[in-house]
Length: 267
Image (cartoon, rainbow, N blue to C red; front, side, top):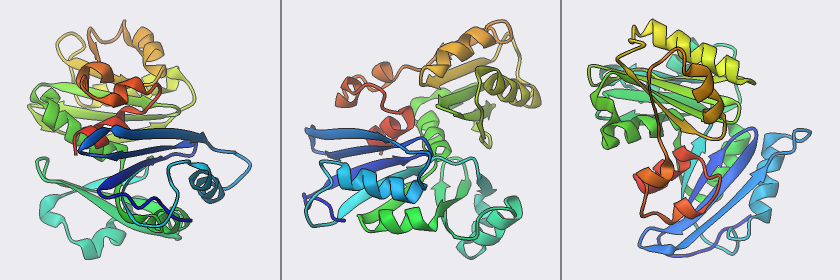
């Protein structure tokens, strides 16, 4: 397995149990953008699926090393305050939160300086080994990327909640008095299940049904959730990537996840 040796080329990868997104580009050359998506075979391990997708991806060829950014879709992550940030204790923190998690993992972290938090999460060791073979890899969770986007976009300046839906996964991030709270992620099969999780967090945060705002972004499930939520929350705003990232060639690619766009365009 090898990769194209092109100066300053970045490969962004989104890892999910449903499929893999690959986006290759050179920051100074928008026309260099290439994108591919590979759904997973549910009868085969995620590791085998990833190896196959990388081998088939047309722009991961040749010899060399890349600057790789990998988004790991997971519900198993936790946030710790910056004052308790000690890399030596990451595994302890993670095991306390997820005692039943697989032991064959690598612990990763994202430091969110503005929020004063560090997000701790895990990567399957088999997936980690494959990704490390591609080059210098930085790992992210969708929640980390979305929290950074919220700060830069100004969404976090009001009482609101940010809801991101992608396939079976949903991530909810509350904002109180301009401060981003700890996000929560879930896996659900139906729009009603996503609605249940969202309303539970909305109520737990003490948000107003008539005054506070719900921001929605993601795939086609957003439309379904908008209809379901209309009688519960008055102020709803759909975040459209084509409006947020107007000048980007990514807008020409149908189906590219919002968190992958935010990672590429806001880095």
